[in-house]
Image (cartoon, rainbow, N blue to C red; front, top):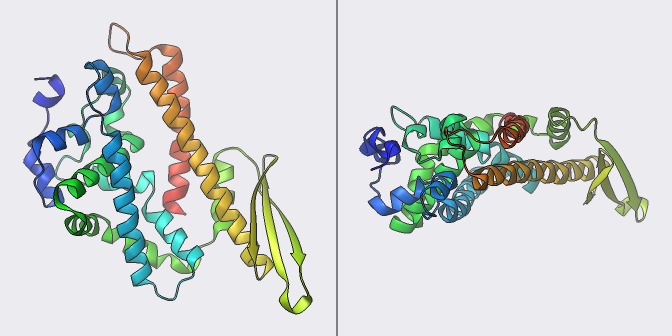
Length: 284
C-alpha cells in the first residue's frame, strides 16, 4: 500500500460528505491524479471521470438556474453559471468536504506533493468533478443531481443575490488587469435602418480582437462581446496552465522527489496566473 493511502483519513468521511458510497475501484480512480499515475507504471488517471463529471455538473447547474430564474435573459444566466461553475468555486467546495476536506484523500506524485498539490485549486476542482462523474456512473443522473444540489445550492443562492450587478464588461476589465493585458477597447458597427438597427461589437485586448457579437443596442452588443472575450481568455489561461503541469508531470521527479527546478519555476508562475483568473471568475 502506498504512503498516500496509509495516511489518508477514513474514506467514510468523504463518502458521508457526498451522501453516497462509491465502488472502491471507481473511487480510487477518481482520486488518482495523473502525476501519481505516471510515477506508478501508468495507472488509469481520473481525467476521463473529470470530463464526464464536468458535463454532469454543467447540466445540473444550468437546469437549476434556468428553472429558478425564468425572467433572466441568456447572458445573465451564463454569468450566474460562470460564478458557480469555475475552478476556484469548485476548489472551495472540495475543501469543505467532510472534516478534512478533499486534499488528504488525493493520490499525487512526489512533485505535486512537494509543491502543495493537495491544496491546489485546479487539482481539487478536477478531482471533485471526477468524483461527480463516478457518482453519475454508479447511480445515474437523478442521484448525481441530488449530490450536486447538496454541494452547490449555497453557491447558487449567493450568485442569485449578485444578479442585479452582473456585468460582463466589468468582469472582463478585472480579468485583463489580473492578466496584465491592459484595458479592453470596444469597436461597434451599426447596420440597418434607424428603427431596426443592429449593432455588432468587438473588443480588442492586447492587440487581439474578440467578439463579433450582435445586439439590438450598443450596450447589449458590447456585453456579448465582453462575455466572449472573458470566456476565451479564461479558457486560454487555464489550458496553458494545464499544459505546463502535464509537461512537469511527464518530466518526472528528481531523486529527492522534487520537480526539476526549471520546470517547477514555470509551473509555479503559471499557477499564479491561473489563480488570478480563478479569483476573477469566482468574484465576477
